[in-house]
Structures are given as C-alpha cells and as structure tokens.
Length: 334
Ligand code: PBG
Image (tube, rainbow, N blue to C red; front, side):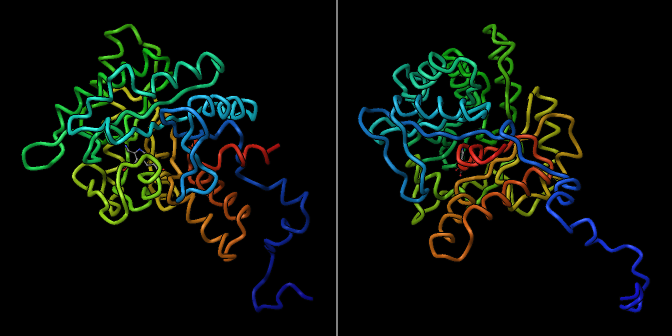
C-alpha cells in the first residue's frame, strides 16, 4: 500500500512504535512505582475484628492490632507511607472537638503502636477536626454556624503537636483554614520538632467524591451531606488552587496536595508546573468506590480501570498518590 493512500503523505506512521509489547515498553513515558503510593488506613477503638466499610469494598475500620498488621504488610510491599484516619465513637464527639487532643484518642495509641513495630514506615496524620465534631465540620462553629478560622487553627496546632509527640513523621492539615500551615510550623518548631514535615492539603475541593469516606469515619450521611463550601474550594476554580499552593509554600509546607485527583488532573498539572515542592494527589473514597461499583455491575474491568486511574494521576504530574488501592496495586508492580 502506497504511503499516500489517504491522500496525504504518511511519512509518520504512529503505529510503527506500537507494533509489539517490547516497542511499546520502550516508548512508555510514565510508570507507577511502589514508592509513589501512600496507603490511607482507618482506625477505631476497641478489640476484636476489623469492621468492613459498606461503601468501600475491601476497606475496613481497623482495631489497633489489625492496623499494625496492615502497616507491616504495606511496608513489606515497598510502600513508603501510610495516612491515618481515626473513626471516633459518637459519644466522644462534641461541638468543640474536645476529644481531638485527649490522650485517650485512639489515634495516638495507633501511631505509637505502628512506630513500635514499623519505625521506618512514614506515618502521616490528618490534621482536621471533623472526626471529633458532633456537627462533622472540620473546625469550630461561630454563632451563625459558619466555621471559625482562627480559633480552629489554635486547636489544629495542638492536634498536630500531639500527633507529632505520639510519633507522626508528617502532619497533613486537610481542613482548609487560612494560615494553618504557618501556625502549625511555628507550633512544631517551638516544641523542638523542626524535622517533622507538613504535607498541606493545599487545593482541597468541596467535592461530592468524599461521600464514602464520611461513611467510613461516620462524620456525615449522604441523606444530609455537609456543606463545606465555606472553606473547601469551588470545583470550578484552578487559578485559586495555584494561589493556595503559593501561600502554603510561603507558610512553610514541605509538600502540597491536590484532592480529589481523577476529576482534577488539570489542577494537578497546573500545580506541578507552578511549584518546586513535591506534589501529592489524593484519589479519594468516591473515586475508589465508583470503580468497585461499576466492576460489580460488570460494566468496567476492575483491574484495568484501577490501574489506568492511577497511571493518569501520575501522568498528570503527581509525585505521590494517596489511594485505597495502594497495597493491592503495589503487589502487582515489579
Ligand atoms: C476531612 C477529610 C475528608 C477526606 C480526608 N480528610 C473528607 C471531607 O473533607 O469531608 C476525604 C478522603 C476521601 O474521600 O477519601 N478532613
């Protein structure tokens, strides 16, 4: 067949480079590594069995014992870090998040237990008040029911400090209050923790994709979804994300995050091009659960969709990916 079969001179036939698996491997631009992955894990108080999260197949609310086992497995798989999220009993929640800094908070025991068994595993903790507030918001409310910025930041500093004292390597403020990165940095430095890092959820959107997570930590229901638009970002905005990242950078963040990931690949790319800091992306609960749901219905190939979703996030520019798929995907990587 002549090269001008289509009426154009086909000097460049793109398919020549796709002829065989070996050729395709040679020209592949992006690869997911075990080291790119961060495993989010849930923990709750109590003994006995880990409790499945209905809306997140394969995800459980761990006991401290099962959490430590999970961490051992994750470390053996070559995953460098876990991100911890506590699920707090309803009776311990109140309007001012008193339980956050209570030494009896299951989170602190969990951090200490992990560090005793897996000292080299990086432990990232979430700095936000939503696990501890009866209303489910990430901060303290003012008289009109809005989330109060500066008083929230004060509590966040105490929470971050307590997490670091228990052994957390990196604290990750996910609350979207203004000025919290700077305040947390000061609080850690003042107590001698200059070498513990801050991974800022810099561009965190007010997203419907968090639904299953709020089920996992029992901080809200789909019937009455919490409106966090007064502090989380508008999904319509990308310039604003760059400004958030710049401010967090100036405030002393060591790493920044974009969240969610899959529906925000353009934001990941834009942030990647505007900061020199390491960039994390969070493939959130809803992204995880929709792949599971479609696969259960026989509408999507589970493994292929899972792997493609993660590769896309890496390709967009994320250095690290928080994903509930971390351990199972790491097990498939070379
Ligand atoms: C709360 C927090 C949320 C997630 C992580 N930290 C939910 C929210 O902002 O309402 C979501 C994670 C996920 O959906 O997997 N500080």
